[in-house]
Amino acid sequence: MSAIHAKNISKTFHITEDSHNTVKHRLFNIFNPPRNKAVEAVKKMNFEVKKGECVGIIGRNGSGKSTLTRILAGVYKTDTGHLKINGSTLLMNLGVGMSHELTARENIYISASVLGLKIKEIDAIFDQIVSFAELEEFVDTKIKYFSSGMVARLSFSIAVNAGADIMFLDEIFAVGDMKFQEKAIKVFESSWIEGKTVVLISHSMDVIQKYCTRTAYMKHGKLEYFGNTDKAIELYLADNF
Ligand SMILES: Nc1ncnc2c1ncn2[C@@H]1O[C@H](COP(=O)(O)OP(=O)(O)OP(=O)(O)O)[C@@H](O)[C@H]1O
Image 1 (tube, rainbow, N blue to C red):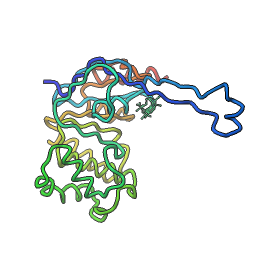
Image 2 (cartoon, helix red, strand yellow; image 1 turned 180 degrees about the vertical axis):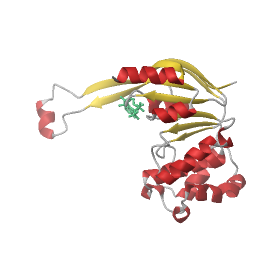
Image 3 (tube, protein in one colour; image 1 turned 60 degrees about the horizontal axis):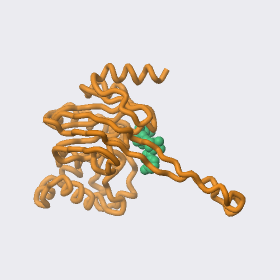
Image 4 (cartoon, rainbow, N blue to C red; image 1 turned 45 degrees about the vertical axis):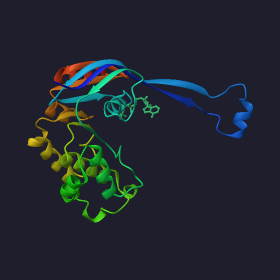
């Protein structure tokens, strides 16, 4: 059974390149307006991720990994094609999906209810989430005052304890301090992972090789390859030298 089925999905950003940011510049460039530029962050692609699979996404900076993940997690709408997701999803990177104006407590309730948990169910795992994240002293602090590692710990802890079916983990092993990373790795290697579908984005080929059976290699927004992890890494490395 497939967890993710993507058919012809794509995303283009339209940005304005405005170098005339002073009054003088604007006056002198009145007949030379700011240019619009289209960035094809994700070019039309098709793929399928099976339930329970752990797949990787690799590629250079700006190749479209985060944009693709955000489409899959429902943060961005795809411009074209069709996307079918079977199960609850959770995107974990530096606090996407978290409200920075709200406290850790409020974010836990909101994120967990988005995952489909009832208030009583959240009450039951609340302390677990806070203690796993090691944020007992910051429960009622707005997360805008958190460090990026603390935000990542909180969302990882919600994901682990609330249990989304499909997890998008964007560079989770790169944030958080060493102690938390070890904890994250332990979770990853425990039974928690069984039956869950995981999409792992990482610049660490060791991490990708260790956990992913299949890997997508992206280049300039294009899905260059999706298959055997060793082959994907080989293609990526060959392109970097
Ligand atoms: N919100 C946005 N608005 C406009 N352009 C964007 C936006 N987000 C990403 N882009 C552009 O889309 C392209 C792909 O970016 P994306 O962040 O998906 O790459 P990435 O592979 O995740 O990079 P990195 O490895 O640096 O995280 C880049 O050219 C980027 O400038």
